Length: 128
Image (cartoon, helix red, strand yellow):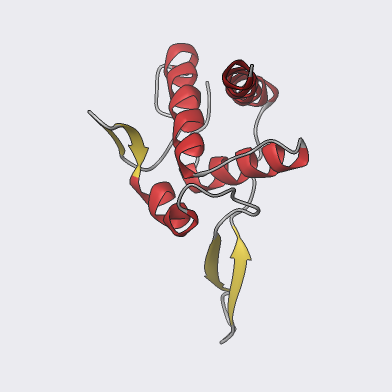
């Protein structure tokens, strides 16, 4: 059975992976890959991959919190995951940090990597 993660954390994983491979990634591509991850997750585990509510409408698939976090990039490349503010218990210092990468199981990594591979193939098909 698969775990349920924050879509922000999964988006961080996607951004790091794509940037490491020098692959273009923007807000719409993140939404597209999240849709693919969600579809595969539902198929295998029979539940959502995300804690957040997913919106599907005529414009497409959207995880609102993720979309809003990367909205400032427009159609430009996203170099780093979005940041969150964190207040450690017992301290008075607010720390800004990028969203953490989930601790996926091997099966979950395989599903997410399939979605990334599918995205890379789509980019290659458009380029040729």
